[in-house]
Length: 107
Image 1 (cartoon, one colour):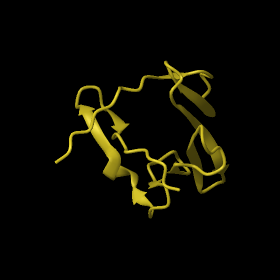
Image 2: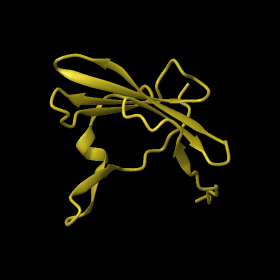
Image 3: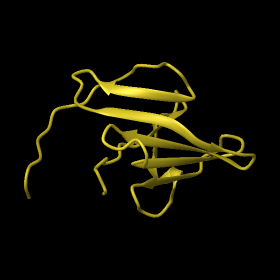
């Protein structure tokens, strides 16, 4: 088994908007853009883009009409239920976070 080394990435939100954010690494090594792609009465879809391709999302997040959890698609893979990526941090806090995803260029 080969060891993998890397530097941690610390992202800072440059916009502070809920409708779309621009996350930039503190050392300007990486940029992730979080944008709403579509919205209708049945669902809302967000895309996460990298600085190399602003037209094709690396990750697609789809939520229900009442902001309920929906599906996640990483790259060109099939949609998966969002519950598979969530992990409860603590029972007292009652908050969940999207589990770390391996973001790689799929093209």
